[in-house]
Image 1 (cartoon, rainbow, N blue to C red):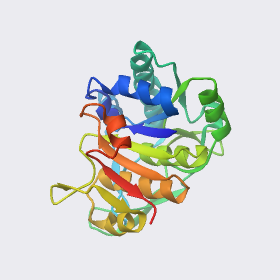
Image 2: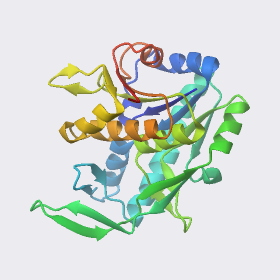
Image 3: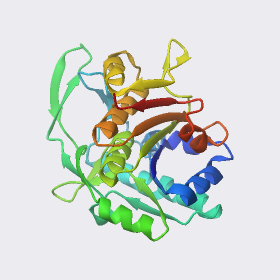
Length: 267
């Protein structure tokens, strides 16, 4: 079984073979889809007259700062337009997909971050209110397994439920890692718009878990979250993490066969 994370911006630019490729893999071994959609959230936020805010952690991880209003926009875009567009694409191609958020059936639970430590404009550490972002604490693996067992393909948006039943923004890559780890899928695949991890413009074809951790500080914005999520999935018992290009032909099957992608495995 495989957990696949599709970036929101990738959805509009997927290779025409991708959906049928998902269908082929789903029929063979079962697929769980987790999606992102940060760029679409940013676009809608701006259209609604609100300026998106991003923060950088001391370790260099860039993320969206989510206040109450942003959490509502995030939920609307992720669990609405993006989630249902993916479900529609799958249904149109014969995949019986079910669109859900982490809120449904307590699928993804998270602890709301009370405080965030960020790097301010002067390059100094600063403590700010945590807003409506969360650190994933649990995944309802039974519910996901039940959906899969009935022949459906779950499509999950990265909205988590807090202890106080609030909508929380959680990172899509790390949501996919947690889903893969809790459901115990063999593989987790991060679909993006590049061939995998590129260092000095060259594709890194394979890495061990310890090598991936060692390289983290040298990896640029965007890809560093995928590598972090990959290491988390492996630490939760997933056999291998894959990073591949969704704009190439049959990207899922190719990645499973370790063609033109980055493969990360335990040491």
